[in-house]
Amino acid sequence: MKENNVRRQGNQFELIDRPKNHSLWNRDIHPTPIKDRNWSKWHIAGLWIAMSVNITTYMLGSSLIGEGMNWWEAILTVFVGCIIVLIPITLISRPGVKYGIPFPVLVRSSFGTEGAKLAALLRAFVACGWFGIQSSIGGSAIYIILAVFIPNLKNSYYLGSFVGLNIAQLICILLFWLTQMYVISHGINIIRRLSVVSAPLLLLFGVGIFCWAWYTVGSFPEILSATYLLGKKENVLFWQIFCPGVTAIVGYWSTLALNIPDFMRFAKSQKDQVIGQFTGLPLAMVMFTFIGIIVTGATMHLFGKAIWDPVVLLGKFSNPALLFISLFCILLATTCSNITANVVSPANDFTNLLPKLISFRTGGYITAIIGMLIMPWKLIADPSGYIFRWLIAYSALLGAMAGIMICDLYLIHKTKLCLNNLFAVKGKYYYTKGWNIFAYISFIIGVIPNIPGFTVQVGLINASFFPAWINNLYNYAWFISFIISFIAYLILMKFFKKPFAGQIAEEAT
Image 1 (tube, helix red, strand yellow):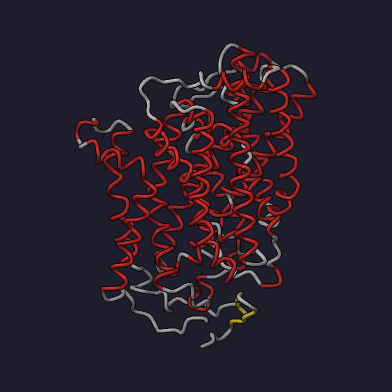
Image 2 (cartoon, rainbow, N blue to C red; image 1 turned 135 degrees about the horizontal axis):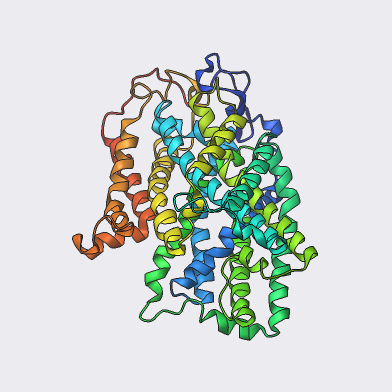
């Protein structure tokens, strides 16, 4: 049976008019009209390239090698992680393409119209952390390049151990932060323009620094040989690093796995979203990770030590033209990745809290402010902490959420959602006073097994307190939480009375 106020064109749906009640609606989270769904597979591939080609991707391979892998093992780990995470990404993309809805609207079907606000906030706060990390990296790039020409910057007043920066470093970070605030002020339409312009330029930059490393050292086999010395550790087995490494890669993109409908709501078709994503993500991630490893290996020959951070590497040069071009590319890459991956989703999530008061731009500003307040430069100071305390830790939360959403979409609702009721105060997805308690029970059950390993990683509890097998569950955090939450939600929704107290509405066919 067809819904009132819903138009169907092929396999896509759209709302004809605004919902009557605006407490769950505003222009920014309104389903994208079918005529405006014009992103082709090339736009989508370019989007992933723009998000993937950045300094954190460059350093992923280095972090894996630092734990004891060799270069090809690190590349394999990144590739496998990308392919695995593309499965939930394409599954959760489907309703975005079909109904033109963003993540905070989609999550209402599983967590409830009110419960979705908390679920979206959990995703939003992770993005705020990422926004801060990328802003810190961009600001550090400005500082290091300026210090080449103004050495006295390094003697700037130190703001103390609590802040952990000197005043010049802080000013550079705030300068880059303000630049991004300007981009945010132009709204979501700037995203596609940035990806189209930046993707080929960033790929060219990556190839350029790869060629520089090869030409300067003079021997590609010698560079590969040097990579074996980057993180050589005794008695470290491949599988000991591979499994948590894959989990870290999945965690790296687990944020996008949830909010990917924020972008796929603009896709022309399901075919475009699948081809574009399976082309763009693995290609960009593997290529730029490999470039990072090779350039780092080259620094062993050129400077007698490994320089993992490309910004620090640029500080070794003095050619003004080279420095300017490199700085421009780094800042462009960081801006594209940060705005695309870490602003769009939380901006929509904060909008979902109070649609009448918070617009996309306002949500973006909130994201940027929170991202700075957490002092993200401290978060990435330790490469081991970057993987095991940041990437894996939050992947446990997002894995549980992804398991619930995919189970709800494919096994509970059979990919058929009631578009009108996603914006209805007391409609199909109202459940119990707006909350689906089964979703939150499943979420908690999925996260609990990862808590012991996390407490050990952050040093709260000695590793001997729990059996080793319990501690090791943390290395598979995203997978553990995903599988357990998926099963728990399926059992609760199928075999117990549904926590539903709203009007029954027909689903769209």
